[in-house]
Structures are given as C-alpha cells and as structure tokens.
Length: 383
Image (cartoon, rainbow, N blue to C red):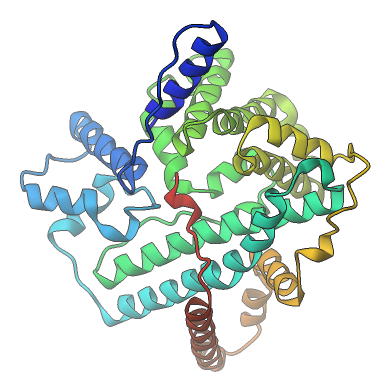
C-alpha cells in the first residue's frame, strides 16, 4: 500500500541529487486491504491477550476475515465482538425487518444525498484555485463535508443491515459526529470502530494517559498521524491526521475546559470549522493545492476569482439535498419529545405506518436514481 508513495518520494530525492532515478510501478491493491488487515491484527492480539480463544476452524476464521458486508469500507469488527455469532446465531423476522430498514436508509443517504452533492463538490475541487472566490470554495467544501459523511455512514448502515439479514450484529460506526462540541467528541462519534481500534491496539499499549502529560500528548500525535496514513499513502493524509492530533492535544492542554464554559452553538461551530478545514487536506489531492484552497477560503484571491460563481454548480435539487443533509446530520429530538405527549399505542401505530410509507418512498427514489445515473463512487473504497 505504501510502496508507491515511498518510491515516488525517493525518486524525487534522487532527482534533486542528480542521481539515477527509477521507474515507480503502479501497484494494484486488493479491495479492502486496510480493513481485513486490521481484522487479522485484532484477532491475533486478542488471542495473545487471552481476550478470546483461538479459532480452530479455518472456514470460520475466513468467514470473519472475508465477511462481505463490511469488507470494503467497515465498520471494523473485532473478532471477540462476533466470535459467538460465527458459530451460532438466529435470524428473526424482527431482525430481518430492521436489516431491510437500515439498508434502505443507508442506500438513501448514499444515493440521494451523497451522490447529489458529490457532483458539485467534484466540479468545484477540480477547478483552478486561483479562479475561485471564497463563496465558491466554501460551497465546494460544504458539499464535500456532506458527501463524505453520508457516503461513509450510508455504507455503514447498509453493512449493518446486511449483517442483520444473516443474524450478525455489528457495532455502530457513526453517532451524528457533526453535532460534536469538541474535536475530542468528534472522534468518539466519527468512524467509531476505527477510533476504538486505535485506542485499544495502539494508544493504550503505548501508555495511553498513564505515563504523564507529555507522553499522553506524544501518544495522541502518533495515533492520529498513523490514522491519517491508514486512510492513504500521501503527505496530505499525514498532515490531516497530524492536524486532528494537534487539536486533541490543544484541547487536553486546557482549551477543552474553556470550551465547556461557552454556549453550545459556539462549541459546535468551532468543531465543525476545524473538521471542515481538515477535510480540505483530505480532498485537495496535494499539499500545495490544499494550502491554496485555504487561502481562497480566507479571501486571499486573485483578479480572476469571480470566474466561477457558486450558482454554476448547484440547482434546486442539490440545494434541497444539502438542506436535508444538514438537518439530518444532527440528532432529531423533536419527534422523541412529541412521542412523550401522545398515547403509546396511538403513536406507535401512526409512527410505524408513516415510517413504512417513508421507507417505500426512499427506496423507490433511490432505485430511480441508481437506474438513471452512472455517478456513484464510494469514497472509502479508496482508503
């Protein structure tokens, strides 16, 4: 996975030294290499630690490693979490119905929201940064922020739903991360299976927060640098991971305590701003382009900045999907509060009927868009 990156950088250094360079081959990687590698590592470590017994049946172990719903993009499932289910599980009608529901919700997230905003995000990020004004940059970044969340959480929903159809119960992977009040909280809500993996198999063995504050800060930087490299073999992913690690250290140094005294809206705005700035490194394609994009976002633009106004890249449908995406990115507590004021049986019947109709509509719309469109990339396939 990293051979091409190392070879390319070494080739660049040799060229600067006027030494003989070499051809860097393009290596094809197996699908899901980042995920099944983590699965195998967690299995070996859990057996070594005595957390779980070794699996003596090769077919059963292969089922854990290669189980198709989460193989390509997670969630990362530890062996001890489903070891009992590998040998004995039941499929109930209720679980099957819940699985279908999660699949439809995940497919709707992916097809209706993520794909709709992806076209605008891709068009804007592919433009020359010198010709982009701040409004267009922020529009592209907002679209990408929504795209990556609904793309990945949609896939996770479908994987969890597919697993339920076969009697497997996977851990949740997202918990409204954009509603977080700090970067520390964001990483408790975003790609939770990855965060727990790094915590249990790297952060704690490195000493966690048990060896003093300086060692804790160093451990956080190490973990998030490696987290960035896990997502991709390039400098921009390394910087993205280090960027998040620095903010976790800053919050541990005391800024987190200061945040608690601020209004909730301010805390959430700060977190969302940090996360969105981080996504620039994640999406830009190179460090030079990422820094140029950040300068354009801040208003440092050239005379050609008005060449690509925001209205060129969005229509009513995209704006509608953006609005829906922003709303459902946050926990919807109004319905829960309303439920408490209604009789249980009356609410249950109305809610189940309405949700069935809603799921049918979402499923029909998703199938229509799948049949009519050809642009449907899963972002986390590449990571």
